Length: 582
Ligand code: PEP
Ligand code: MG
Image (cartoon, rainbow, N blue to C red; front, side, top):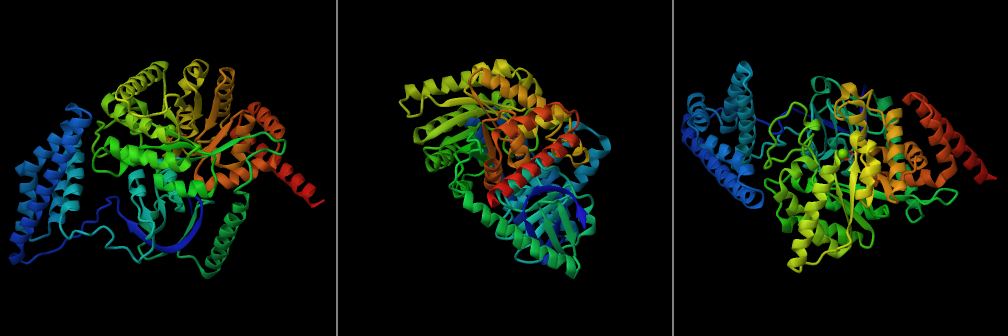
């Protein structure tokens, strides 16, 4: 039995599929000499297809963003014609009588070893490029189809060292039952995507890939963060029972669907949903969310081989906006960097990606790409109620600049007589301490605030949200975080604007209780958490929430605050239950 970090709730039981770090499995296949010419031809045609693909992406980037941004694709094209790369792979195929996948892998390995030895950053970067190219070529090999060749069954539980948000977004829900990783934190984007796909997951489980074997029976308890490998019959029976209870609990919650989100003393809290994919709207509507409080639009970009066109983006946004109409949809502009990367939009390797070119920063450095997205968003505003939000604003200048670009795009659309909502509300995320401290000034510039606690916590306590080694510091109840939230909510209300929380904190009922007491007007949570948060809100009074928050703000330790909140809630819920029985 292993204890990790609970990343996505639910209990699943199934066979393990342990995968190595590389998503593409490379097997060595020995070939007879007669097959070698055909194999070399197979590699060359995949290389040619890759060249064509890259050429197309390059043209799109030049057209949509600019020549400088397309530079990396020239480097890729050069590599694909470089005799030391493709030529070397051919030499290995012919010399060792092996398949293309294996030969490419050998080239990659030699290159990585060489660049490690000489610790040259230019060569290291080239090694990453080659890595990415090898994946592209393997993808283009006819009859490759190797990806899931080692899967133990039709349905399985993935056990991996690490999974990127893009890997997770790409998972086939028909075959993947859940996953366990060695790395990661509860608010990493990989965990967030798991919740949006409703895939039970546990992250931060040390050494699990060295002990678990493909085919082992695995239990994931995504709520408690427990993983069991090859359980004995007693544990297996107990978890089958737990699974039934979990499903029953979900069914009971459905009864709250049509009830309003108000406290016992009739204080209204807006309860909206966070989404990553347009398809999630089905679950959002099933749970009757009052709007979309955060649409992480970067997930429309993340698993594409090239930049989605304005039309493609417009269609995705419009689909969501139209379905939610007249309820609001808050579209956050692109937030890449940190732990989310796009294959066609290169950010040079950074020592600290979460402190580097991330969110509004690369966006403001690529105005054409920004404008393209704003045009698509504004056009979608003609089909319902759209709100626009900028991520990770750190200084006032960034907000001014983003608003200026938005005004330019609006003016352009107006000139061209393209329909959009001219009164579209504009807000910013507060997720960096500098913005929290300056919230009174920033509040004068926007129509609403949304607090991104996932980031606000990591930047306040200087602990990477995806690093399991420092997860003991990453605590939403850290008193400094609570004081910042209170400051932000006071500043918002003083300026007459509303403030929401769209970080994962809002989806945990006991923390939602505290947030209401800290003055938060709206909670935006993952669709699967809507009903459990609503249940809590309907069980407490606003006055209790205010008192609890006041008391929390006087404490100096997260552990004391947590005990205090849980004790309070137990008393309140027990008293309510007793009152109902009478
Ligand atoms: C946050 O930081 O809390 C947030 C909602 O944004 P993201 O999780 O996408 O960084
Ligand atoms: Mg964030």
